[in-house]
Image (cartoon, rainbow, N blue to C red):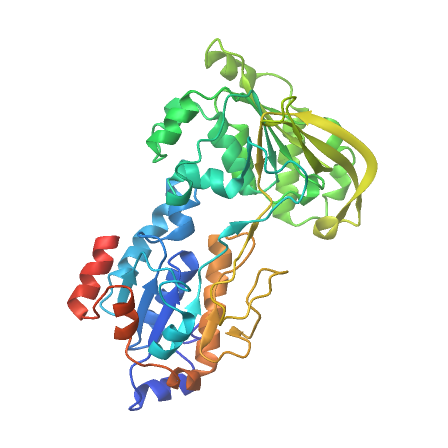
Length: 444
């Protein structure tokens, strides 16, 4: 975002070259958005200093606790983030909850700019009867469980049923299905937690349905994750060819990624038993595990068992599509069906929570109202990633918007900029250069 020459805007360069104090920037949140923002600032803002605050003891957010354990290549960005944190101009402070341990107004007094990159910390609720029954979990909690997120490590999901149902057609839904059905010998090679591995070793789940409100042309997962699921050893895909009737023509003019994705689903639906079946048989005498996609079904109610103690299935409203492409809407037809399952996982997206009473927050949309990369009506405050579906690509874009907000209004950096010592003392830290360096290095 530095412009064609890789340099900061002229106004900011003049300001930095003046006798103005060294800009101090606070980044709240140490996930990808927070670290990308810190990288940009350190690279393009000459002598700027960056402090990163994180409520967990350890950094890296979504990369550490959201990426599937069998995707280690995605976590390689941690190496880059670690180098950023080890910069002499960057300090990391874990175990600090902004809004509780220290307030945003206090941070504004101590820093020239405050970037809120604390991400989407909660899951969207289904809003249907029965969603609080035992056996129903959010995707966020389940992913946190097998990745060792402190708040989810004691989840203890009940895996004693044969059929699991995942609500959602995104990459996270496929991640969960893959973890549930992966052979243990593959999971043992990953960094999945020992307790989760032990639970999955006792799992009786052998069938997973992924259910979405709309059709094959609206799925949100990508071809890489779909192909990985199709090729998962010891499993077979169950796709209904009728779901893809007429899509050959509809997909002709679609963007290439969408076209390739749809063609792979159609090919899989029409595939005759062959090499895949042989592979399943070679996996052992046990019944093959299977997974499938169900389209145009919207959850109406999680159905309780006869004694009311747990989930036994989901009542679905069948839908029809109005419109086409990504803008197509699912409209109930009036018909319903029941899908039997003992495990329900809701993977319908994330939502952000308000951080501090001093920060405006739109609860309906789950965002901090902002314009041109700045929080509306609060000078020196910049919104980071509060999106509903956090991804590395999205967080990179958000970090660039934040930097544009700071660069486009360098005069705002003159506000605030008190001594961060008072903030750090509030959370039991002294602000000395040596301790800063050792603190973040120790936490990494």
